[in-house]
Length: 148
Image 1: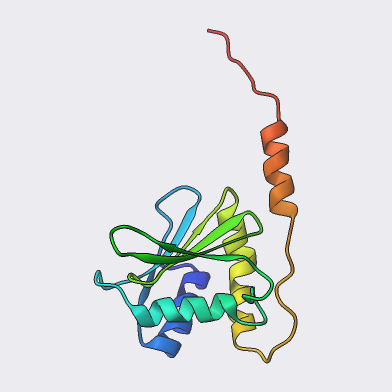
Image 2: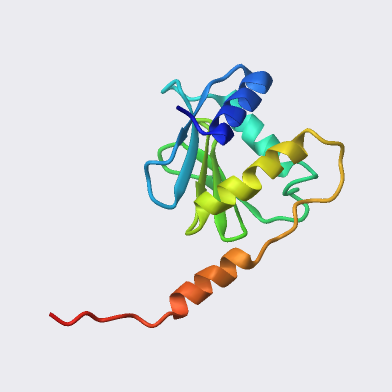
């Protein structure tokens, strides 16, 4: 049985590209949205970029996107925002979201990003520094040593 957010994402992507996506949560601190087909999808990659770079979300004019060309010929576009790294693989069509609090960010923010894509232009997504604060608080906690 799928979570409602997974069903919504599947329906959202299917309606726009005709592609079927799978939400992979098997790796800690990573959410991977990938094409069910193993060959990948450039249409899916274009959708993820259009969603992220939409004026209501994280427009190119205001957010630092990086383009990475790797020696094996793969091309990725990377954005880091709210202590979350979003990576679109142009050859596979996957969207990889990585961060210490990614599951919380995914549940609370990703649907807003998808929703903003369908609305008329307004204001971009605000930066949320609570994830940076949580990470800093976590790093500053004293370590506990257990004696045997």
